[in-house]
Image (cartoon, rainbow, N blue to C red; front, side, top):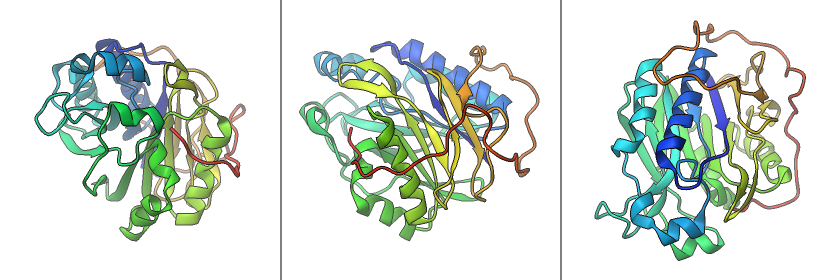
Length: 291
């Protein structure tokens, strides 16, 4: 299966605009052969902690929120699954108990699962509630997938549980401020024997400056694809420790209208060879995950 890690600079608290950009990237990724697309932490609002805290009712989302219709429509039109992240409604369906939530939509646009970030970082604790339930698992195209959000990855037991559960794909939505932190996902893949997709935020936000460099690593820790531009897609065949696809690791082209195919789908299951020019293999850092 071909999967994609996507990134773009979110518009602060503009959920409609960010949903449209997300939908465009989903459509573009599908046109380049992807069947699964992962987006960054709080990509639907931007990692704007102060602004979210000031207007939580404006920002809070449920999986069926009408503002996310372009995302669901893009999944349905392209026949792909998408992993998106934003402020999730609490148990009452309101901003009370709001979480940093990952929503997974299937190829029919229907919700597959939801995961609430369990380990909050620094100021996140002032406005969000931690997830209280184990989970973040789903199976797609025969592959067992695990979900994690940024600072979750600083806790070894998160990845250890995913490996013990037989997960083959580890999908991380994050907002890291240094390339060294993104490089640590190579060791995460190698140490636990699963492929890793990182969708990392980019640009200045109230919570810091995201560095981008979203990427994909094989189960042996080798880098398959990195995004080196501001907006882009990293694509690679996953589940088989296969090589990256031609053209990955470069900025995405113009975003397409939602629901419009970007061209014929590429064949799945064919190894595409080495990283293209401009892509960088993931390295290993002694630093810590944060954010």
